[in-house]
Amino acid sequence: MIRKFAKHWRDSASLLVLARDQPAAQQNKYNYKVLVFKRTSNTSFMPNSVVFPGGGFDKQDASLGWESFFRERNVSNTALKAITQVDGARPYIFQTEGTDLLDRNLSLRLCALREAFEELGVLLVTDEQRQKTETGFSKCLQLPDVDSWQQKIHDGTASFQAMHTALGTVPDVFNLYEWSCWLTPAMFRKRRFETVFYLAVLNEMPAIHPEPHEVQEYFWDTPAALLEAHREEKIWLAPPQTYELTRLSFVYDIDQLVRFADKRNRKGSTLLCPIQYNAADGVIFVLPGDDLYPADYDYLSDNADLDKYGEQTREAIRKQAKRLHRVEHKDLHHQAFFLNQQPLDDHLHVQGLNGNLLQNQ
Image (cartoon, rainbow, N blue to C red; front, side, top):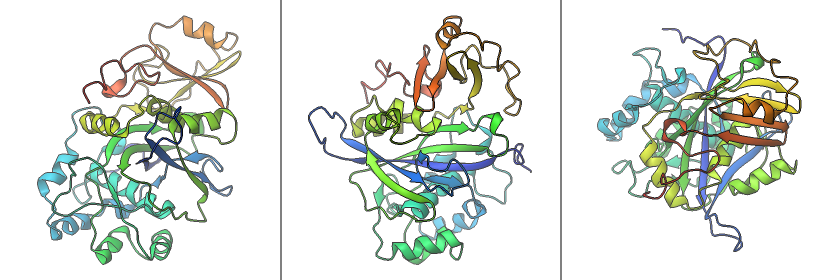
């Protein structure tokens, strides 16, 4: 079976890596930081942008060889199958093409783990006998020859599976939490990606080994600090990053966040494909659930109403809508988020209006 949109965009997976940290100052409420890196200027897609580790799906991620790999390490079939059982929305990226390929709910996790190692040397592993940890945290293995393995994976002289076989390790697909799924808007028709984001949490910050061809620099910081650096034009965050960091910014405790992510893990991910409207004082990107989001959108068509409200301000356009789920851009570094309904898929609210959602976590 050929994937429905294979010729229109590429599939990819990213990893939001959070690590426990002591607050640096009394006014800093967060007990964790987020790992991001700046792409190099010669990167083909969004050069110089600051992103979460991740990259394109590769055929090695879908190899059925992973089934025998897990079986040889006594990894429970029940535990593997549990990962594939999701009750909520399933975007196209999760559709497995055939019985000769690994289930997409597993292969996309492997893709995110592989890319995080290839780009930053972050190798998340789990115990064969206790795949799902009691705390829900992952473990990062520090390798003495990490640079050598990174180079082999990057050059394709060794597969991610071959590396784990040689090391006697098991990739931690169990303590990743499905977080969201984004699709590049249709206007970028030559460079589009459907990307699933997973959340991984660590009890301490691991050593980072940036891959020089892809990583200009990396940094750990709180969600609020990264967003502030974006507003101050010290860095530029791509739109999915600003959205995800914004909703993370309202949760200060990493343990609470893990409990929430674990509870939400199998509730699915509605595909978030922004649709643009021009305004007199900026640009609006609407998301599913907004009054301006077209019903039964085909994910390929340009917006015929792009300039319908072009002579009105963002505020004036907003006041005409009853249901809001949108990002309003004043310019590349200044966005405002609006959501006046329940978040999709029982997720965090992008304006922090989480009510009792986190109270019982």
